[in-house]
Amino acid sequence: MFINGPAGYPKLKVTAAEIRHLGEVLLDIWLEAMDINDELHVLVKLALEASCVMERILNRHYEAYKIPEPDATALLDACLEYCQAQSRMSNYNALQICNVTMKHHYMVHACSRAKYLHPRFGWCFRGEDFMGTVRTVAAACLHGSRKELVSKKIGQRMCRAMHFQMTGLRR
Image 1 (cartoon, helix red, strand yellow):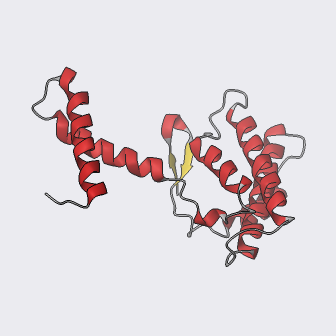
Image 2 (tube, one colour; image 1 turned 60 degrees about the horizontal axis):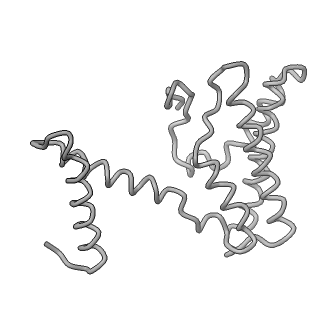
């Protein structure tokens, strides 16, 4: 389902498994409905085509630990084409169509290393998990603390928690 994402951008709220094969269907529908003289429609087509190429390559080598050549190069080319189309759409006539995020950056890195390690083995969301942890600790530190001391309290609690985690100690 589409919802309003950050800063007003549309966001598809589903899991990757739920939309794993949606790209090909969207591309078929788009090709029937698009206006070839509309630059935005052409950009959407390019992004969908690149997405489908990436999906096909990743599915073809699903059981592999790395993507063999020449598919690894084709995967990176499709990834870069997808990101370029997304970037151009994000700045298209001041419309909020695509939100280019750090996930695009991580995707380029995963695809550029595909000949050494299959992108499905990469973990792009480690930073998000850490931020969620910090957010929880920060919320706990806000209660009963003066504003100017909250950062110090967060740092102390995070250091203590990481110490316990790394040494295997429990409270």
